[in-house]
Amino acid sequence: MNKTNTLSIPQKKHWLKQSPSKYFEIFLCIVLFSFIVVPLITMLTKIDKDTFSRVFSDDLFLESLLNSFTTTIAATIISVVLAYALAWAISRTNIKFKTIFSVIFTLPMLIPSISHGMGLTILFGNNGIFTRFFNTSSHLYGFSGIVMGSVLYSFPVAFLMFVDIFKYEDYTPYEAAEILGIPKHRQFSSITFPYIRKPLISIIFTVFTMIITDYGIPLSVGGKTKTLSVLLYENTVGQLDYSAGALIGTFLLLPAVAAFLFDLFNKDKAKSSFITKEYIPTKNKVKDTFGYIISAFVSLFILTVIVSFCLQAFSTSYPSNMSFTFSHIKRALNKASIGYLDNSIFISLFTAFVGMIVTFLTAYYTARVKSKTSKFLHIISMISLAIPGLVLGLSFVITFKTSFIYGTLVILILANTIHFFASPYLMTYNALNKLNENLESTGQVLGIPKYRIIFDVIVPQCKHTLLEVFSYFFINSMMTISAVSFLATRSTKPLSLMINQFEAFNMMECAAVIALMILIVNSIMKLIIYLIKRKGEKYVNKKSI
Image 1 (cartoon, rainbow, N blue to C red):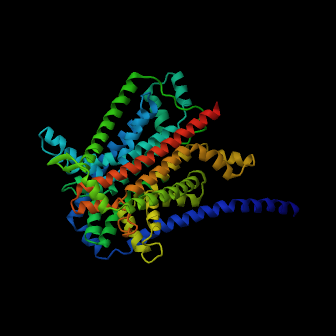
Image 2 (image 1 turned 120 degrees about the vertical axis):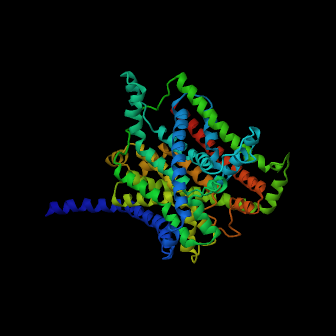
Image 3 (image 1 turned 180 degrees about the horizontal axis):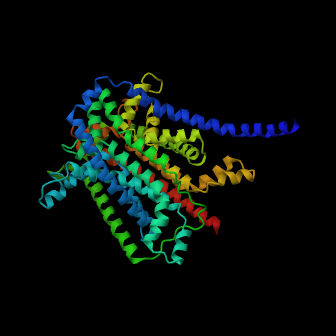
């Protein structure tokens, strides 16, 4: 009798000790479910009965569906391979100027996707610089243009995710393989590939979803090649056919379902033990030469596109009059008051803070706390991966139009947080999966509270990832157009929406000026993040000495 009572007391204490963390995990599920799943379900209930037959019987829908998958598959393959090669060159070779190359590789993600189409048009369009210089006909518009623009738009995200993965790889297995004389290709198949296999699946679906849900590039360089995202844009924005738009949007959710199934059946967590030794690139002329060549080529192409895009902002009348002028800047500033820039910075900063905190907490529970609740939380997070910005904005309008947050900056912050949640979540999820899985249990044995393990051990090891997450939320919130197009009012309008407004009036030079302003702000943020990282590294080195 006494023995039974003695055992029951610790059990009760243990349950009380664990319940706050469990309750907070459930609270996270409720919050994410309310802002991800509920708006989506609400929007889908608005589909009319005759919408199915009307959309599926339309040849344009079937053609757009085929175009979307062919262009997206091609662009995804090129983007992932290119991103891996560039991340390998930065992390696994001894080339110089790695910081400069890394900054250049991420420049395309500092401006709206539609701006990439503008830059490619200036270079390779009918009146493009290279088209006229080589006196050739333009082959930009259509499949090739969409693929080229999509690769330029998506590979920086994949590059950052690959670099982040490489940071957590232990050099010890490679060192042992070198001693045993195992050739490089066997090292890749036996050590590298098993290590990156599961994160690679996440990267592929992230890139695939980014491309298939983007409408900026197909809209600007697609020509007669329509995609599902463009069809969705035309139905919702052009024709205000929300029912057809909602139905088309459901097809863009398929990658999220596929990503979840892959993740569910892929049991390999690709965990590593403690990183006993940081990866040390060995000197190899062939590797270094290849690293220089691919880094220089991609950097030159990116800078050429951005410079040509900026050229339009300072030309009197491209391409007939290329004389330098500031008149477009004055016009853009007159049309777009400085208040829109203030709105964008305010929204982006709050989105970055909220997004970073929610992302880390969510990824911590899904990666390191294995339970039914964490699995459900992971499902919700993966669902957010494939929700197009237009669909998200439309669902938020339908769901929250009568609420007190509608028409305020709060709903724009919430929309941006959900819209850009997936990629930072996967980045943090993969980073937390690489840490030793016994940290919390070891701390429990030593009597160290879990929150101390999180703040003193886990967060410091993931600080670079968290800084990248903050940067990712801020940058994308500065340049997003689709997610906030339905939600912004005259007083809460962000600067990025002025690009569409100027393009609608064929004021392409002013649109270029707005995109240039966004590029400058985002570049400043990237510089700040870099300086913080550098200061942290110096502090660690000084402390170790």
